Amino acid sequence: MTESRSFLLERLHAADLTDVVAVEQAAGGLAATAGLAQRVDGASVFVKALGEPPSDDVFAAEAEGLTVLREAGGIATSEIVLAVRDLLVLSVLRPREETETFWEQLAHALAHLHTTTRYPRFGWHRDNWLGRRRQVNTWADDGCEFFAQHRLLRWPGEPRVREALDAADRAALERLCDRLPELLPVRPACLSLTAEQVERFTGTAYAIVQSIEERGRRTPRNK
Image 1: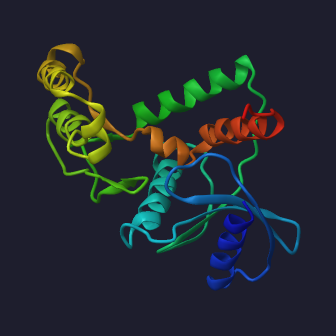
Image 2: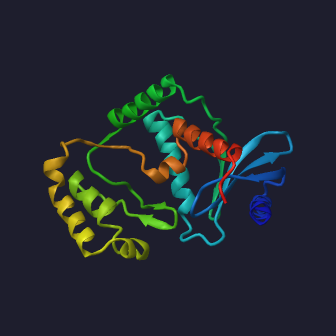
Image 3: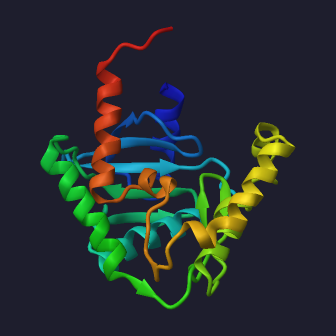
């Protein structure tokens, strides 16, 4: 834990954010080391750092995604304080109480995102990242083809997925992909959130992550 805090503090100071005086490591996360950093004026920022980034554009792509979600989709996302090769610094979105109203507002926000950001093709102008794995976003005219090729069949070749799925599992996945046109209604392309983008912090989703982490810090864990 101390080593992780030191790592984050070192990265922040190397990026000229020398007014950071303390860092508290955040729970969760599989690829990057993350935490809340306190600045000398008392303000906090959320920071993610990679010791050896898989590509120079990991955090640049993430920062762009957050900005597009806010500007094009109307989702409240963190402001980008800094995005460089090995460091991403964001403004902090505080947790909200998980009431029925909260979940209703989240549903409306996602519905607004999906109904107001329409595009002629599926994909994006650049690939981005799921942790240390590239998420392929090559443009496609057919949504089912895009989802099958770049969101499902993209992964069985990865070592950990290959270990987890046997031949029958892979065959079942391929059959599912073949049936997508009959299972899914035709819809136009729109901005959407993947599970990793929820980790990448988007509006109320960020609040969910923060709230879960706070509960985890308060609840003793079995050893």
